[in-house]
Length: 326
Image 1 (cartoon, rainbow, N blue to C red):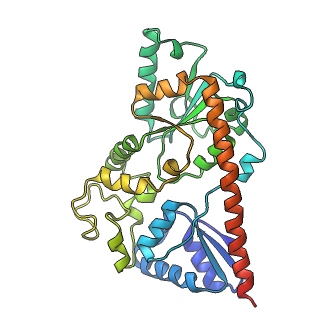
Image 2 (image 1 turned 90 degrees about the vertical axis):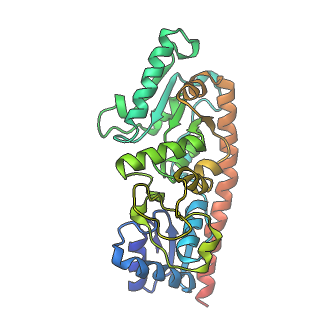
Image 3 (image 1 turned 60 degrees about the horizontal axis):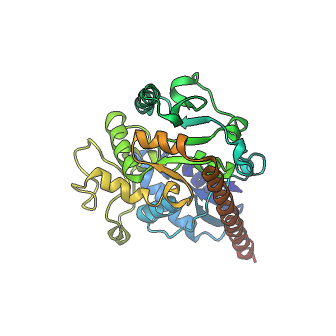
């Protein structure tokens, strides 16, 4: 039996069945866990780590570190490979740079990144008024949360044809990111400092998104292992006090930057970066097609190497379950 998010369902299933289980841990670990059952859920996790019919794998380095903070467990992690995408789709410009499209797809989440998208649109309009060459037609920008109807989702076929994707993260771990990486479309991401400032603003104004570090999912078993961490994972912006001394009086951007370094955005090796809106426009529209094609090829090579490691990690986990039955 394979079980993933939410962990609460996996914990209940583990208590109800004697089947072998492979459990895939992803943040936030305590999604849908009521405050009064946090300790029970984390104790269940600790029990599972010793259960001979259970194998645990974390979905990322970030997930593994958070489990270590919350429950004192060292859980191996595997990198998401998105085989369902890689086997069916690929970015068209990788083999032939002349096929690199003109559309830049700016991917944000509706209701959160709209203000940033409006700013991008204003910079783009001003740049065109000034006659900046790489912003003029046929260059085209599609801002998802401004120009697409509610509920619209870009198809993989569409994303195969775009010039690149600008991704504005709304969490420290997104299923979408390894999928886009498997597609091989060049990805333009904000720098870590940009994300830290953006995340703090979003959490301060909405208390939503960035669920991997959102304090609504805070919870831990107190232990000596927490001393190894300079900060707790959860951003307590606007709250009266922190959970413990490790997070008291910390600067929120520094706290988020600490955990962001373990995110897929920082650990996947071949992305373009921007530190400002002007930098976003330049990286996405002015990078030569040959450079985009080279980036995509490097992404593909990295994906192939990491996918093999992922397959081996799952194989090892399953082998451990089988051996435990004898």
